[in-house]
Image 1 (cartoon, rainbow, N blue to C red):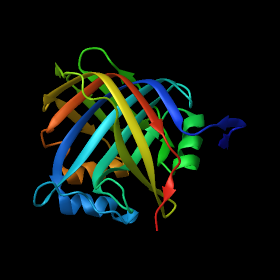
Image 2 (tube, rainbow, N blue to C red):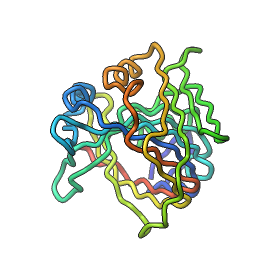
Image 3 (spheres, rainbow, N blue to C red):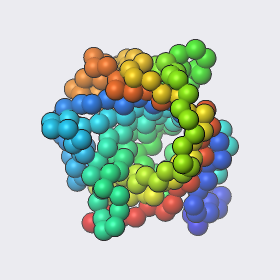
Length: 229
């Protein structure tokens, strides 16, 4: 149990309905490692010299932390800890547009949440733009693909985070439905922002995405974070 702004938050935190659009890129592993080096984690290298970077935007519609928008910059990493999955997702940057989820995310899980202006447009090509201090930091546009047959159910992923020098691992369960995928289909615009510079060095404004994915209904649970080290 955690107390955030006078509210008791029971674990695991449940997200009963969200929708998501994301895109995935193959990027230079050496550059990706330099971006996340502060975490002490190692990027996963699915092919020699390559790592995987993902951008995603999420609308949380019904959940324990209330409704809000979120944008994520993440990398696939090697799992850390005995008996954990060999592949995890390191959350490098996590802008949100709500104060309650900001405090909950940073306090409970150590997620690198920051407050931004974050409009999302779900019509036609789906688009989100992150603004800080009135200036564009990054925007992502995704073209929906073809329907994907329903899978086997839930997927468990270890989400890793690092703020204030502390790296944590959070068990994260996802149950998606209404999934569409396609090769390519993403457009990225980058502004004058430190994280945008990371993405520019990785080539996300120049390289084609490997795949784009949209999920019309996503249920999730987040367990307590486990400190590493």
